Image (cartoon, rainbow, N blue to C red; front, side, top):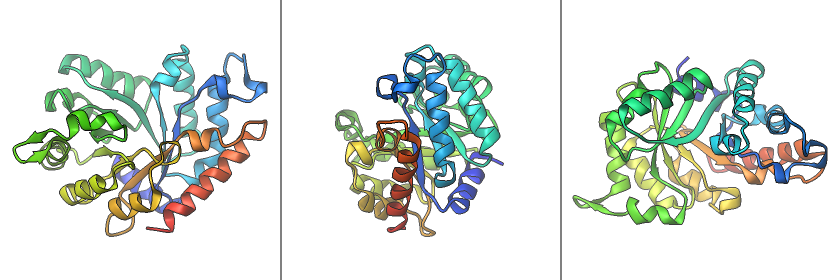
Length: 270
């Protein structure tokens, strides 16, 4: 199945719009994992196995692996998710953005090497920098639109012909770039008014929404602003609030409780 088909099936099967972000920080791992050569894989695998039935997707952030030379552990983790939890998508959060020839190599890295189902990418260099990702049939490309960080307004709120730049990006992706039907947008939970605006522009295009949990985004406002008519359309990401819900050897159980509570809170407003 394609990215969109698999996502739609996961929304229904797990009754969940929750995306768990996998941002492994070894300094925060429980004692028994510290110093172990495969600690990053083991930590993330345990979190995945504890929460897979509660989510629609996982989102490993590549920098947290690459900074520790753990790319092979990222490969193993994605393979594990696909083998043990079929139907749960893996979004590689890489935010790539470069000229076409370089983007071809990044696309090969994401989809051929790591085997991810989707990737986050920057639209700043235009459609020819996005086309190499779209060339992989059935794979998702999630473009940055209105990001959750405060500094995003420096550029995303610039006036472009009477509308904000993020609105122009939303229109471009939804109306012109989405030739494969596998595109989505990143819109931060810290800006619910902008979520609503993007939803009006793009129709049912899926939105990846970071910013709840540690970043303080409001779940109710996020869901009400971004849901589609059928109560779906969102991948609401929570990372640190779930990964580090527990500090001791029972971290997986604590992560499961946090994920379950977050899913229930999201579903309250669908």
